[in-house]
Length: 115
Length: 118
Image 1 (tube, rainbow over the protein chains, first blue to last red):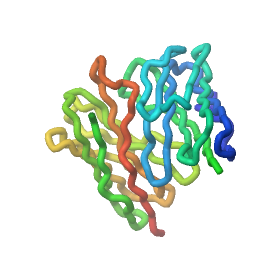
Image 2: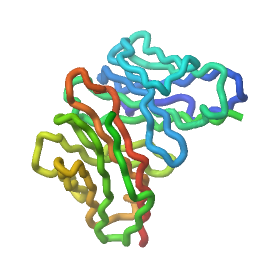
Image 3: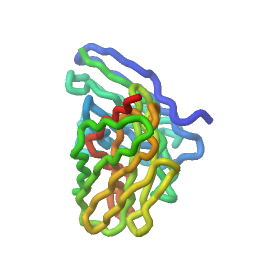
Image 4: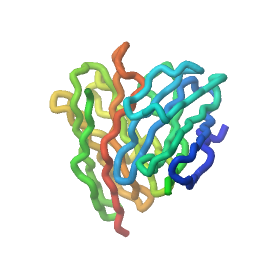
């Protein structure tokens, strides 16, 4: 297991198009998180899953955003009708549900540029 | 709502010297975890050190140690014997440990950019 994988690394899209990102967590981790990071800022929480259940969503996650984790393994984050304000790094992380003091393991992120 | 504040946007340290990065947080909860993460340029975020709020003893990981002052809600990171590879963005983060709290939400500060001079 090589850690948390995110695909693609970079995505350039035209405004109004839909985009989908994928995250493959560490296999034994049952929690998966999505964060958004803009330039010069810390990551902001979007949503998280425990197994296949989506347990929490941030108010940042507008109706244009949807996340799934259908089999409790990989997850997808879709943004519909992209806007220039969606340009950011989208980070995925995973952890075990037990031992909340355990830190998350982050992926390298998907950098989205909306033109 | 909990907040995390890092008041130093940028810091610089000479190689082999010691530097301290500041972090303060605001919470009404009594049980939580605090973390420092390192994010090198164009690379993934890595956990540096963690602290449980119920533990009075400050956490230490090799050259990295924290000064946790619960009453003051302060959580600073000390890097000793700084190395060129320590250059990165450093983020302080908070996570609730309260059942029913926002347990999925790791709350980050805005970060401190650390430069290491040879």
